[in-house]
Length: 304
Image (cartoon, rainbow, N blue to C red; front, side, top):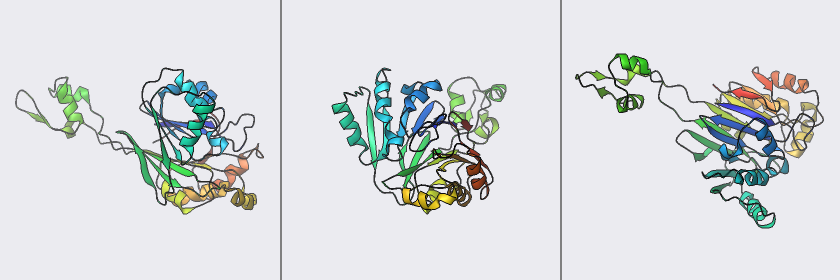
């Protein structure tokens, strides 16, 4: 399970920093968080075929987080994609895509659906598969905005096939039963229990993505105990008043959310174009939370 940052700038791109976009991969399941202008190009740059993306989560409808979406969907259409794509975001997102298809002749011949979110006071699951859940909560921005949490579902432990073979378990369905936690009876009458050949289940991993919000308690609830938190650090604390006026967070705010939520690791992103040297932002967040690093375009982080 890992995430790759595709864009870390806020509002406008600057040299070396594209607009917001982050892709998470878990066992060939690809989830995209935000899709600013240029995201399609960044996806190609990391050699990810856009058709592999099955879920897209848009935090809010400001252009630096969503203008790349119609282009990305149009690009996916050229790939002969046939499996389903789910797009999640604030109310109004479906109308934007409908208008784009009508007036820009943007076509999506593959099956896709849009899940629109209303105000969410406490984190709730808005989408899930057999492998993961995505939860969302409303943030505090100038327009409706949502933070997202990706949570892996508990899985079974690793099957030691070599040991199972030594115990006389033949290849085939019996191995699958053991993997699923079921004891099996061998032809000679012996019973092999899963605990003999299957290791302890790995602790489910989690990731939170929070951007374009004032400091708020809902951010802390969403990020609670996650392995990795990506949190905007648009300004330094000396511009706290500007941050509040524009509905953004400072690096200090990001550090506070991480500390209060008890996350394992914090990564900063979504920097104002005024900061070419990002080290002051890192120092500010580090003053309240120890395990913090600067996100940069095309940085990949393994989770758990």
